[in-house]
Length: 341
Image 1: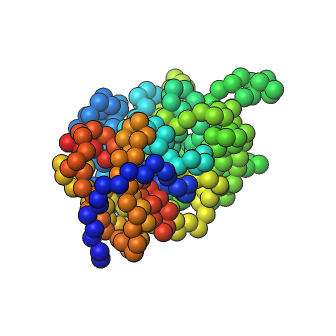
Image 2: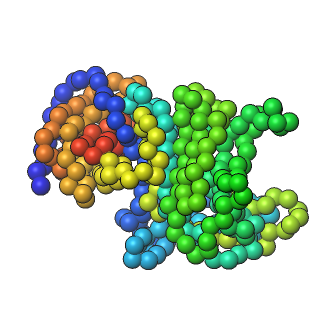
């Protein structure tokens, strides 16, 4: 495999294509706790922040041969204390997507867990920059195994209000089997406000009320029933793997998508870096171009490639700070946040 040292070039354009904004298969994480802090102030493995509960509620565990290391979240055994886990800087990465890629798609593998009496709902929710509107999301109830869509919605014509709502995903509730891995996904179209949810046994959509809102954060949550009745007395445990959030021009949610699969294979290290950042991938994906921009959107480096799979990016000449690296390949593109010491 060919290695090339990236040289300096100033070009101020980005191509529009499907972009992976965030992804993780947890294969390189260490077994054990994600981090050491549950105040939401100190990042743990992979840049994940956690809030509430104990550090042992957010763990990397070994699963079956197909999934390997996965993220396990344990919900509260009481009626209080929602667990949160998220990555920082998601709003910045969304802002640096290519022009026209206004559809946000989130997909992940989800293990439904055993039969349980837990009143926890386990969710992936994409919030706007104010943290009040849920642009799109999916919520799974541990005791009933019912999965629902979530979105900010205007229900005034139906006697309701403008608020975040759960949506049934079929003519009757969609129930997922216990102890099963499923692939599920949701999307939000910034231009139209349309929200979609897809997975085994469901393919739903609604016209949400958050049109033109920007994405601010993607959270995995374990939320107990805060009502006194029925009381929650069981913790509830679920697992996540192979999650991917991308910005696209047109709907590709849960499609057979080799573009996104290949783009998630990129590894950028070390990060933070002093002199050189390595860009590598495990699928022999050919890189066409790498563009590095500062947080004001100015392009500080760009180079075109041909039949190149592993690259070294010289960042010794950059000032200390945070940059966005757009990796454009023959199988799609990926946006990575990189830090120069």
